[in-house]
Length: 340
Image 1 (spheres, helix red, strand yellow):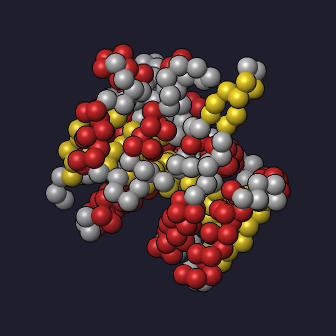
Image 2: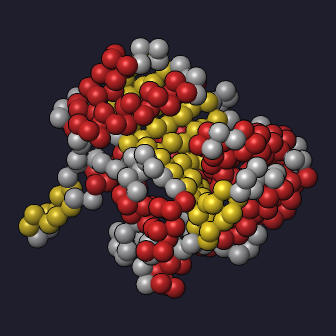
C-alpha cells in the first residue's frame, strides 16, 4: 500500500488525545498514511492568530483530504465556526453521517441503519444576518437551483453506489414554499429523470421526526437542507447511543474532510476519559474513500479490519465510560489493536 498524504487537524480540547488514539489504530492496521499536521480552531487562534490559518487551507488544497478532530466554537459570540469556514472554503456541499446500531451499545431501538445526507453550504447557515433596526435582527435563508440540484444528484448517486434502496426528503415546503419548495422539486426531478432505480418519497419535517422516533427502521437515506440536516443528524445519533458513536464526512468536488461530529469537551481534556470511537469510525470512512479514489482495495481491507475490531470490542464490553465501560481513551485504542 503506497503511502498517501492526509492532513491531520487534531482540534481542541479532547481532540489531540482521541487523534493520537486513532493514529495508533490506523498504524497497527497497516494503513500507510503520511500525515501532515495542521492547526484549526481555538488552538490555531492562540498560536497563529486565526482559526483557519493559510497553511492549513493550503495543505488541504494540496492533499485533497483531511481527518479532523473536534474544534471549539463559541456560542452566541466570539469567532466564527471553523467548521463553517472549512465548508465554505472548499465548497464541501455534501455532509454524510451514517447511523447504525453498534453491538454492545444498548439503545431503545434495534436494526437502525440510516444515512443522513445534508446540503452543507446554503440555507440559514449561509450566514446572511443583519440588524433591521435596534432590537430587530434578520437571518436570510438562501437556496439556489444549482445548489439544490447538486446535492440531489450527489445523494442519488451515493445511494446507487452504496446499493441503498430509498431516499426520503424532509422539508417544510408547506410553509417555505420557495426555498424548501425548490429543494423538494430538485430532488423529485433528479429521481424521475436520472435515478428511477432508487425509491423516493418526502415528508414534512415535523411529521418526519415523529415517524423517526416511532420507528427509525422505516427510513434508509434522509436528504435534508442545511439546518434540518444539522438537527436531524444529531437526533438520529441519539437513536443509536449519541454523538460518540457516529462518524461524519464532508465532500466537495475536489476535497473531503472526515471528522468527529461531537464537541471538544474541554472539561475532560487530558484526563484519558474521551471516547475516540466517533473519530475512529470517521477514519474508517476515510480509508474506504481512499480505496475508491486510489483504486487500492488495501485501504478498504484495513477499514474492514478496524470496523470488525471495534465491533468485537464493543460486543465484549470493552468500551469507554460514556458507553458504560471502564476503559480510558488509550486503553480502548489498545483493545481495538489487540483484536485487529
